[in-house]
Picture (cartoon, one colour):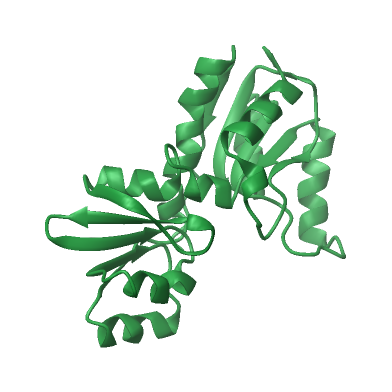
Length: 219
């Protein structure tokens, strides 16, 4: 067993959450029981992930996409159901968004490039979230999730290919007009590696079990 607050402090420091301006809070979002023996890892905070995590017996849930975004002013019925589920079972929920995309060791973008066996050249884009890589003589920009806003910054680096999670409608023609190959992996699929990498890290650092729960999403 490990103490909840020790895990939170460790992850906050390891993922350097203070270095990012994000769309929502990083770190703890819901505080549950203090003693943690099992940690469930998932991409998004939805009810199916919650149910599977609780069924496995997890005390702590860690996700890439948390519950809270922007300046939340109201709790609608969907959010109310999710919160009630967590509170009734005394579950802790942690969320790490941009820090888990950008991390130089276990970030989604670094791990995507490594899985493709590309040479990593550096980072690019706002808050250095994207990864610039080399595939032979080709320069590839990698940015998970909805990375379309970083396309122009990547083109300025002389890329041959742009790899992202989801592509908004204009991105297809922007890539075509700039002679850049566009590869879209799916938002969910592009952001599974970082959260999975937290498992071995936590089991090594603390006396607990960690399991990635895959809740497939085609988008």
